[in-house]
Structure formats: structure tokens, C-alpha cells
Length: 179
Length: 391
Ligand SMILES: NC(=O)c1ccc[n+]([C@@H]2O[C@H](COP(=O)([O-])OP(=O)(O)OC[C@H]3O[C@@H](n4cnc5c(N)ncnc54)[C@H](O)[C@@H]3O)[C@@H](O)[C@H]2O)c1
Ligand SMILES: [Zn+2]
Ligand SMILES: [Zn+2]
Image 1 (cartoon, rainbow over the protein chains, first blue to last red):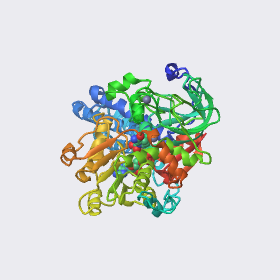
Image 2: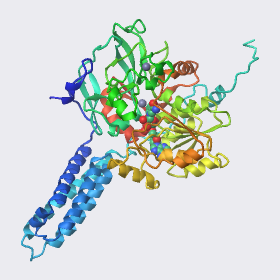
Image 3: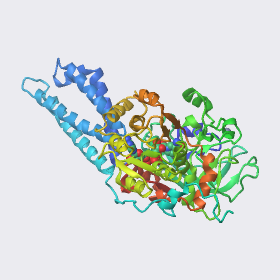
């Protein structure tokens, strides 16, 4: 594979030949995908709310859609950050809000009720993904994973703590060894 | 060869890369026998330090055997020598090097123009760190090219194991410098924030330098236990008030000497609202650092005291209490470590058996497991304190 950065390395510096396994876990990658999805949706809702309201028969609610766009962007930035767990739970809560709003639009008077139903199904699917990602990220990065050990025997002082404390004391000047 | 390569935030891979080659006369190449992951690597892992580039090789705590030397190394090193590589690349000749200010060597940063723009003046070249400090490939790899190798090395005495010698590259002198620049006196209370590897070394250094009492602050039980084993009184900041406890331990006067071994990624906790605000600002690039520990230090430190900051700060920190700092007449000392300034003394202390820095190692694994160990170390899983990698 072509690696752009190889072009700018100086002569003696190593260049990538092939890449190996990454520190990113499966949940990290899913979170990253959802983070970018959030950014894309947020941008659409913020910049082109009419498209959304038109498709869903929600005319006049552009302000609300814009606000949701800001929410999506915030959750997206957080999900793409190291604090992805908080971002993902934020997304799950946002999904809930989306569903409540959409449910309100499923009325016989809405000529677009069919689209709203489809949107509901979609949001349901995304919610599942968000939930799975949030659970998995939390589990994979849980500090309680692995063995629990205390290191109460690791003073680092081979001669013991008392000897270490006295290392700094001024040495007696008239000790027999030095006279 | 195999190397741990930075590809982006939280994305470190064990890649196959070409072997390093001698580029300048003063270069040498070592075959790495041991290397370690540092808390500073976590700042890069999180992509908080600007000017990293995909393809950068990580690692600045490295040792190994010299396999090739350039024509200008001038007999100072020869094939077969066992050396520890200090993380600061030094020329040994410039004015700063002659003063012992090795981490601000004026010669070795090959991207001086960048450093001058960002810091005002250049600092030394560093291994496996940002392009602001030269973008030199790091030592979490099978081979490492050491620039200015005639000066940038520490010879390992016969009989000293890799584990005993490795941390002369960084964390031992870093903890030591953190304590030494506190000018510790026999009546002093020295408080150390952060019980990671650097904090552990600072605690032992403060003991060896004769502090009356050393207090260590963190919230991770196994790190606090290790701190206690090293002679510190411990404070778990999740369970008690750091300021109250420190005042209690010092007749309400505060510790004379405070060492920040946390740096700019202070824990985020609802109990510390400033840390949450910092994180929010950091996310939207309104602030670089989360300096909660530093704020606490300046607040609790005894008037006339010394604040020593080995913990790394990356850029701009908000709401640092300058009023308290100024009015209490505190002295601040900081810096990347002048590793070679301390080498002889620390080598001697290891040889005399005063200290064995290997106590801090909790995990030793093959290099190929590096990517997952970054996670383990960052997430504090498996009671991980310090990871050593064997290529
Ligand atoms: N000056 C230098 O040359 C130099 C060299 C090496 C490392 N460092 C820096 O030293 C710092 C520590 O390195 P490390 O390897 O020990 O890393 P580490 O991440 O393992 O340790 C940091 C410790 O601080 C604790 N902590 C977080 N917030 C705290 C708070 N508010 N109060 C008290 N403790 C808190 C964490 O629980 C952790 O144990 C890092 O910033 C690193 O970049 C500097
Ligand atoms: Zn380091
Ligand atoms: Zn120099």
C-alpha cells in the first residue's frame, strides 16, 4: 500500500513497508464510524433543515431540526474523541429524543407518515448500534479488566527503606574506615 | 524490521518498516534489546501533542547493542557496546549542553524553525516525539538510529541488567530531576501528584535526597500501594480532600515542595468541575491542557515553596492561579529532563544498591504486543504500571 508519509522521511529513517495489527479495538472502530455518521447527519440538519422537514412532513419545525443538528455535532465530536463512551451514551439519549419526535409525526394527517415510519425504523437500528458500541467500549476499556495486584512489596530499595532514608544523612567524618 | 508506528489517535500498529541507515557521520545504529512505554507516549497516543505524522515510529526509552557506527563517532562508541539511549538527543558541544541543560540543546532539533515559531526558541531533538522536536524515529523497534551518538548515549556498566539500566533513559532521571530541583532539606514535606512511573521515581528520589516526609497523591489503588512501599504517605483523591489532608500533615502550613508528575491529562472527575470544563474546552480546541493538579499544587503549596513540574504540558492552560503563585512567592522549576546531567550519579546509586529502578516494571512482553499494551497501560488494566517491550 502507498504511504504518503514515506515521501517526506529523510534518507536514513525507516519507511513503512506494510502495516500490522492496530491498538484500535472493534468497538473503537464502530464508535469512530458512528461519530462520523453523527457529524454528517448533524451538518445536514444544521445547514439544510428544510430537506429534513420536507421529507418528513414536518414543515415549520426547522428550528428544532437545527437544534438537533447541533446536538448531533456535539455528540459526534465527543464520540470521535478519547471520551467516546460519553459521546456514545449521549448519542443513545439523542436517539431516544429523535424517536419521540418522530412518533409525534406519525399521524393520519401527515402525507409523509410512511417516510416517518421508515425513519423510525432507521433510528431504531442506529440506536441498537450506539448501544452496542457504548457497552463494548465501556467493557473493552474497563480498568477492572485483568488481574488485580497490589505492589506493597516493591520498595525499589534493595537495602530496605530505612537504609534508603539514611542514605541522605551526612556521613560521619571521623569513622575509623576513613581515618 | 518491526516497529510500533503511530497512525493517528489511539491507532498504534506493529508495522514492518525498512531498517534505519547511517545518515550522518555522528550516527550509530543499535539493535534494541529492551524498550518501554512512557506516560508521554500516552499524550501522543491521544493525539494531544501537535505535529505528529502518520508513519512516525514511537518510543524514547530504549537500550541495545551498537551494531554500526558512523565515521564521526570518533571512538566514543564501538560495535558491541551496550548502551542506554537518553530520550533527549544532545550534541555535547553547544552552550546549553556545556551548561548541562541537555534537553534544550541548541543543535539537535532538525526542525528548529518549527520549534522557534511555537516555543520562541528551539529545544533539543527528541526520539519518537512530535515533529516540533525533530520528528526523529523512536526506539519501540528492532533497530534505532541514534543521531549525535558520540554524545547521545549512556554506557551500561558490566553486570547491570537491562531492567536496571533501561530507565536511565528517561523516567529515573525525570523523577530524580523533579525531586532534585526542589532543593530538598531535612525538614521538608515533599508532595508528589501522580503515582505513575515518573511519580514512583520522584518518591524514591525524594526519600534518597532526605525529605522528612513524602506524600503521594493518586486514585489508583495499586499505584498508591507501590508508592507506600517506597516510603510515601498516600492520599486517594477520590476518597479524601487532597488540600485538607496535606494541610493536616503539615501543621496547616502546606508542603514546602510539590512535584507535578501528572501533566496535562489530569483525570476528569465530576468531583473536580474544573477538570470537566477543561475537557470540554480541550475538545473544542479552546485550551490544550487540563491542569487540575497544577492548580491544586499552587493552591496548597507553602508560601516560599518550590513547585517542580516534570509532568508534560503541551500548550495553553487556563485559570492557573497566578495570584496565589505570585503572592506566595513560589518558585517554579520545570523542563524535559536533562538526562545526561544525572547519569553518573544515578548509575552509581544503582551500582551501590541504593535503588533498583526495575521495581516499577509490571509487564514485560514481546514488541508485537505493543499496540494492545498501549491500551492496557492507558486504561490502567491488569494493574499495569510500566510496560517493557522486547523486540
Ligand atoms: N519532563 C520529562 O522529561 C518527562 C519525562 C517522562 C514523562 N514525563 C511526563 O510525566 C507525566 C507522568 O508520566 P508517567 O509515565 O508517570 O504517566 P502515567 O500516565 O502513568 O501517570 C500519571 C498518573 O497521574 C495520576 N493522576 C491523574 N490525575 C491526577 C490528579 N488530579 N491528581 C493526582 N494524580 C493524578 C494518574 O492516575 C496516573 O497514575 C506525564 O505527563 C509524562 O508526559 C515528563
Ligand atoms: Zn518519557
Ligand atoms: Zn547541544
